[in-house]
Image (cartoon, rainbow, N blue to C red; front, top):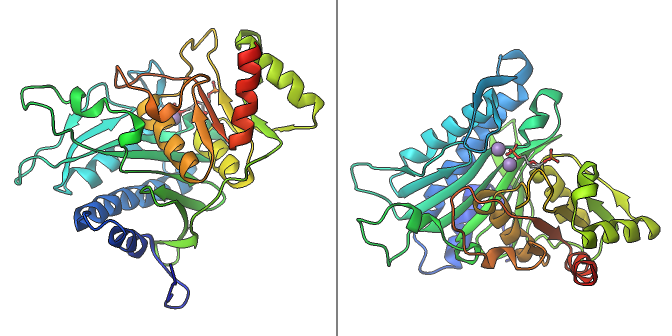
Length: 333
Ligand code: AHG
Ligand code: MN
Ligand code: MN
C-alpha cells in the first residue's frame, strides 16, 4: 500500500482503519474494538514501567484456575483489559487466563458479537526481575449456530482458523505491538512522548531458516525422544539456544530472527504448559501470517478443536523449515 505519511507517522488506529478498507464487509466496529485493546496495553505499560515504585510487584497470595500464584500485575492487567473492553458495546464475551469462566458482557445495546480472549500478562515469573513480559489477545466472532440457551463455551470453543485478529504487546526495551487481521503482520512501537503506537514495520516476514532453538532444557529428561534427538542434532550443527521464559518475548525474537520455539509435553505438564485459546492460537495466527508454522508436534495448532477454555497444548512454532525439521525427528523418534 502506497503510504502518504504525515511526517512519516502512521498510528495503529489509522492502520486498523486502512486495514478495514481491505475488508469491505468489516465495519468500524472492529477498529473500535482493537482501539480498546491498545488503550488497555498503554495503561498496563504505564504500570509495568513503574512496577518497582508503585507497589505492584510480588504476589497477591492467591492462585488462579491454572493453579499458578497470581502476581499483582497479573490482576491489574486483567482488570485493566476488562475495564477498557467492557464498555466498547460490541463485545459479547471476554475470556481471560486469569478467570475461571467466560465473562458475559451486557450493556444497553444487548450483547456484542465479538469475543476477546487474552492472556493479560504473559511471563509473570519475569515481572519482579525486570525481564520482558507481554499481553496476548485473540478475537473471534460469536457463532451463528448457537442457541441463546447454550452456554458461552459453545461460542468460545472455536478452532484458531476462525480467529478474526490476533496480536501481542511486548513490554521490553521498547513497547512493541504486533497484530494481524489476516493481511500480514504489522508492528508498531509505542512513542511515550505522544502516547501512540507508531507503525515501524508492515507485512513482517519470518526468516525461513534460523539456527536458534528456544526451549527450557531443564525438562529435557521428560521430553519426547524425537525432541531430545532434535536438540542433540541442533547442538552438533552450531545452533544457539535462547530462552527468556516469556512466550511473547521468545516468540517476538523468533518472528524477527527466525528459529524455533518449543514447549513440548513434560512430566509436569503432559499436555504442554501453554494454553491453546489465548497463547498458542494467537501466536500461531501471527506465525502463519508471517510465513512460519505452528504445530503441537502432530497437528497444525489452528486446526485443533478446543474442548475446554483453559486447555493446554504442546507448541512448536517458528520458521517453517525449522518446524519441519523438528517433525522429522519426531517421526523418526
Ligand atoms: P504466564 O505468565 O501467562 O503464565 O505464561 C508463562 C508461560 C510462557 O510465557 C512461557 O513461555 C512459559 O510460561 C515458561 O514456562 P517455564 O517457566 O516452565 O519454562
Ligand atoms: Mn502466558
Ligand atoms: Mn499470564
